[in-house]
Length: 199
Image 1: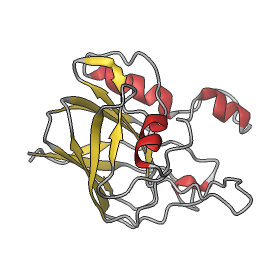
Image 2 (image 1 turned 135 degrees about the vertical axis):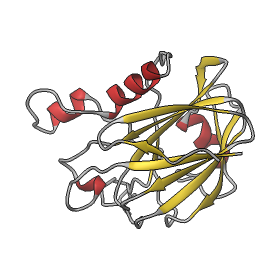
Image 3 (image 1 turned 180 degrees about the horizontal axis):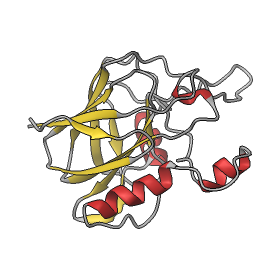
Image 4 (image 1 turned 45 degrees about the vertical axis):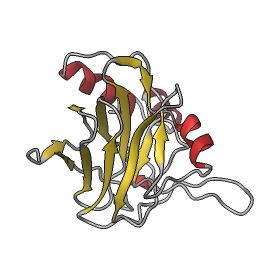
């Protein structure tokens, strides 16, 4: 098992993972949404796709036993354990500078899109685009009238998900810097999170 690796608050982290290894993603303080991407290590143009995954698992929130798919419909990550309460999101795009401008913020704001590209750059790679992320621990309930709302996570400190790599891949995370809406808890305070790689 690897050492505990930090995803700094408001920042991203990317890591190489071999097929068969498991990524344990820990919501250290309990309220942090973690935008998650996975790219085929041999072809970054193939990546985990939310729209292809939803068509495969026939649900909008993956659960233990579900396998996420790539944009070529191949298996890439399988949920093998989840102690968080099982509330995640596959609908909402990664936040970007335009999102914060829309929310009324003036000037630059840390965002998950930039975090993805910075994290990939840190390991010598360039993401060809910003796929829609798997938003671990993000709580976006669908209301009876089919509308969506942005709510605080239901996860608790130290809870985690374990994801098995179904191919050699690059995993990338962003500790979402959203501090305007309550998706990182009612205190609107982004925090660090952690992960380990298990053989």
